[in-house]
Length: 398
Image (cartoon, rainbow, N blue to C red; front, top):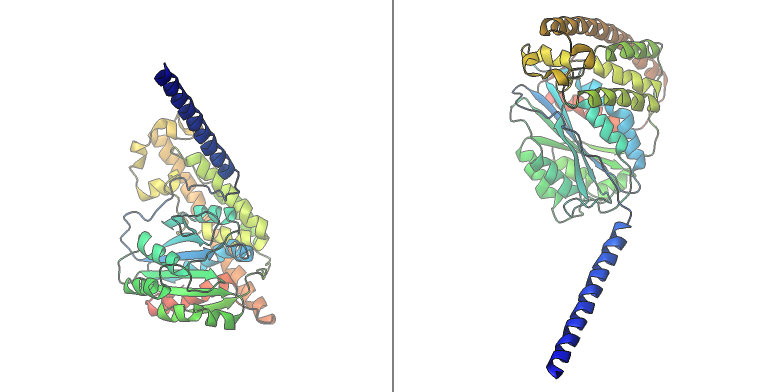
């Protein structure tokens, strides 16, 4: 009887201990769940580089998103379309190269792979995706591992292998370049070995940037060193052509015909990114419209006009339910005729925007001569170096 009672006591004690352990684990998980976290959206099937075999201009932008860098993020939002328009002026032997942009953030609260680093997008031609992700970004965090983020961008991205490819990394931030387990000198050597130019944009005092190895990193990367005030507001020059370009943009959007599982959401995102650009300034909205009128703004993943322009037989493989409702009861020949009409409308509108953009740029250049030169911002730094590297790689400016 004594042995049975002892056994009951042991079982009872084990049960109590097991219940206590479960309660402790549950409490720990609950406490952990209450910690503030930075949330992100996962890109919905980004349009990546695919099997393109022509010349490419590839730009990876690595942004410090630690607590003091909200101004840098705002400059990136404000300058995206201006940077794109600079890229689109470049030709290689008379041909327009494919433009691809990638985004990384480092120094974020979101501990990605233990390094506070996140690849926001791979190298992609989906410019609306780049805009979308920039407008989601917020600052907050610490631990700025410059060497590590350069290493990841060099290794993770699908860099081109043509001799004429222009491959550029831009890293912007304000902390000492030596942080992290991966030495920046090793990371940059790896990039240079792959013919990637590494450029640094220090946010803060120039002497501090030099002392904290931002200049040394650029020299080692065969790139350029810039020093900017990341809190400065981007200055725009309003022109008499902005409103007319904006009206053309509204007509341009009407030429897009969504298809596929993500078609409608992508078309809606196109309008959201128009709104985001307009929220910065009317000038920035005009810059986006100019970008959209160029061949680099391709949406073959969701727009039927772009898709059939690339592949005339594509309609045969698109299921009827993945077409807009207004096209589902039409024959394939009728759909092709509608697409052809939209394509012709688009070309006409794009030409109108291009003509206005030329006059707009002339006006901006003339007005700029009247103003005192301002300091560099993120966009000016990137644009200046792009044109410099273009000469090195044998590109011409249109």
